[in-house]
Image (cartoon, rainbow, N blue to C red; front, top):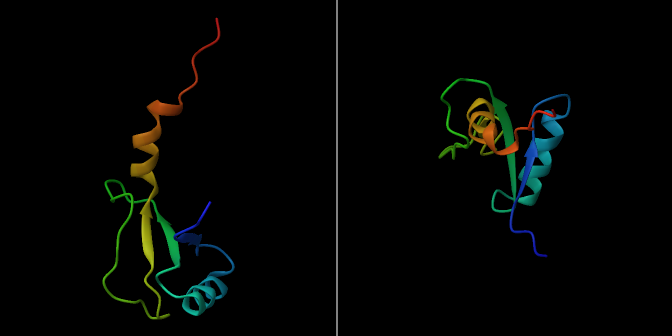
Length: 79
């Protein structure tokens, strides 16, 4: 299996290390992502400009993703 792109969670304690890794590997290969809990936010944003750390940070709308997938993975009650 060939991997075309990789998303790496940049939230948490290793944000600067993730950004440095993504800069080194290039924006075509590694994509730093960060979760956003705003209601109604798109599942993925594609930024046109780099942030202060010189990376294209993609925000992931986790509330929207959870809402979309809620019914697909629901457990049936056991009777």
